Image 1 (cartoon, rainbow, N blue to C red):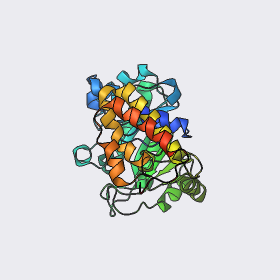
Image 2 (image 1 turned 180 degrees about the vertical axis):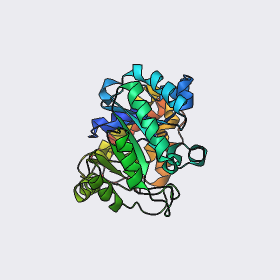
Image 3 (image 1 turned 90 degrees about the vertical axis):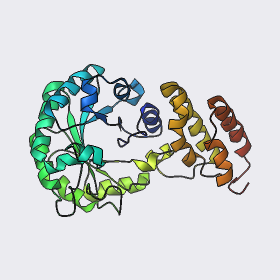
Image 4 (image 1 turned 135 degrees about the horizontal axis):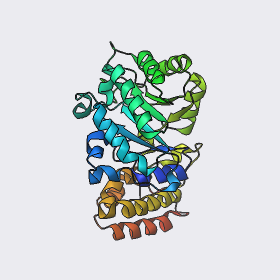
Length: 303
């Protein structure tokens, strides 16, 4: 499961692991906030043993902040650390962090070295193809990160300037993988298990990270099959329970982004009733009732 703000929280990671993901990333946290033990940021790194192998992802560009952040995170005993070099959001990238590090690969290499030395753990990085179409420097970035001791790279097949626009270009991933001795994972526009598998086979990658396609769809981590409505509701009920347990009442609203996809077999007006519910217990009971209704009832899309 790819690192995603608001999605790869502990409940999301548990769902991904139970439905077939090999490992998962945390949401990314600011090194500056981690260094100051900011409570909400530190909560991003709470996990259960069920989520292992777990990769802690952080972002930042300042060496001292990265060093302090790693010192704060190491006692939590993650399996691996990861440096975010892919976030293209302006408030991150324009400060030289996230995808901004693609414009300063030497600094990125130094940060990888610091993370390794401070933690004693394997350290990877998640990158993009480059800053823009004129600065596709993934080969240079990959070489520097490998020389700095990175244990693996995951690569989103777009530039920072693209954000999520256009289609991901996966061909460069094969070129990068063949030029490095460390594992390379593919990412971007992977909507099914088979699509991810084919990408790995086509470009001789170590694996693939699935991101947005996993929202409300943990089934994406297993071979495709026809998912019955009652199975989707069962997954939704479990996800809601996990979200409420982890986030408290706020978990109801964190969960909503997933619920729309879980209930995609319902007509829009029916789905809206569940998406606008503000009482957690009522929603839990409503989903249980819906699950009983759909068993043997067929398609409710026009009900």
